[in-house]
Structures are given as C-alpha cells and as structure tokens.
Length: 201
Image (tube, rainbow, N blue to C red):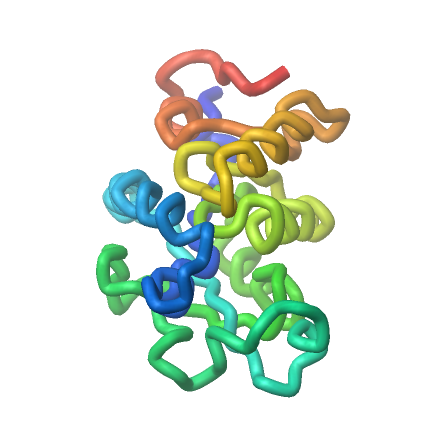
C-alpha cells in the first residue's frame, strides 16, 4: 500500500499577502518570503496536477483587534488590497481563498470541516511565518486530527536562524509521523509512493 492510498493531502498557503511583501514596510521577513514563492508555485502545480485541494489562508484583521494591542502595527486588514494574495503566486479560481481572523488557519474559520468534506487526512503547510502562523496552523491541524507537514523549503521566518531553530525543535518529536518536517520534494515522493518515507526521525 502506498502513502497515496492512505493519505489525501491539502496544501495550505499561509499569509502570502501583499502587505507582507510591501517594500515600504521594510519587514525583515520580506526577502526570505520572496525566496519561497517559486518553490510554493512548483508545489501548487503538483497538487493541481493530482487534483488535491489548495487553500490560501490569509490574515483578515481589523484595526481594533486584540493582536494589535502589542507592538504589532495594523496590517492585512480585511477588505483591503494589502490582505490579498500576492500576484506572483499561481492562485486559480478553483482554489479556496480563506481569509482568517487570527494566526492559525483553523481558528474560527471552519477549515477543519471544509477539509473533512473533501476527505483530507494530511495538511502540508507553506508560507509565513515559520515561527508564528505556519507553526500554529501545523499544531492546530494535529489538534483537529489531521497529519501535518511543515514544509522546510516552502516556509520562511524573519531570519534563517529563526527558521532553522523552529525546524530543529520539531525534526525529532514524539508526534512523528503525525507531525513532521519535510521538503516539498520528499513530501511528493512519499505521497506518490516513490520510495519509503524518509521522515525526520
């Protein structure tokens, strides 16, 4: 039995929105986020070829939200151009664009039900930031009884050090293989049954 027989994956693309790529905001994550556009697009093409669901989960905040009572400045406000998916990503009409009110793609969005209705058993998570919205989405996927893969080459943080530190924490973890770190190439190999899953044990 191949992994494809056992798993139906969905690709979750997190917070790849215009405000996070706005050079005028001078965000430290922007140059690292730009590097993952091509790998994400390549993975999107593979998922689309296989007929697997693709979800673009994007921040849709309001200026008065609790999250902005700290040092974070309002951004990605619901209904604004800055909260839209960047044009550089290959988003199609049939993909699910899901604005989210907080950090995790599962928080008050109904994503778990949407995925279950499509028979999804595994969430492959890409986007930004590795140490915030990506990680929380991965954790919530497991909490909602989905296997989760944090895609090391399709995620980014505000520095390479932070990105690698987060990956390092979860490369060896007691939830394996429910939660694992993989490259997009290894994920596709495993899903299509081209070899024994390498994992990150």
